[in-house]
Image 1 (spheres, helix red, strand yellow):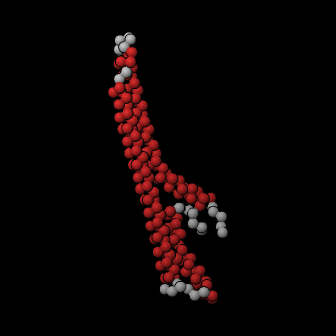
Image 2: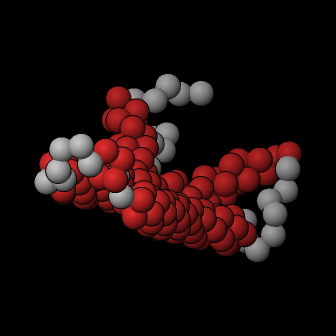
Image 3: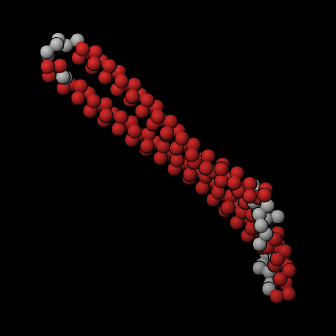
Amino acid sequence: MAHPTQAQFFGVQQANLDLFLALVGPLARGAEKINELNMQAVKTSLADTTNYVRESSQQPVGAGMSGLKPELANGFAQKMNAYAGHMNEIFASTGAEFAQEAQRQMSTYAAQAQEAMASFGQNLMSSAGGAFPASGASAPNWVAAYETAMKPMRDAFEKVMPATAAK
């Protein structure tokens, strides 16, 4: 078995990197949406706290517990519920986008593999005169038919992972 050349090694690495980037894209967009949601939540929380402190400071000294407002607790619960709903939407849409990209990548690979196998079968049979080559003395014919049939498959493999097929 031949050892891979430097070009073959880097070809595989490039193909892996391309696949990684294709699959990480949806995850990065989801993380960006979560970051935006968190920034919006922090800004809203700071604004609410500032308003609460401002209103509390306008209460007369000695107002005691009457300065606490129960409606603020209800508003906080509603905001937490909305935040959780937005977070669930982001997770669901990111998961769906990731699954679609993974399916697209696998469909592309499966189509190329299927095309290569069909081409291999057609080339093998045509190189062997429409029948499987006989064994024994005709072994060189079998090898020649096999090598002829493998060429399109190697070409298809190189489309998926450039410069990786053994030369």
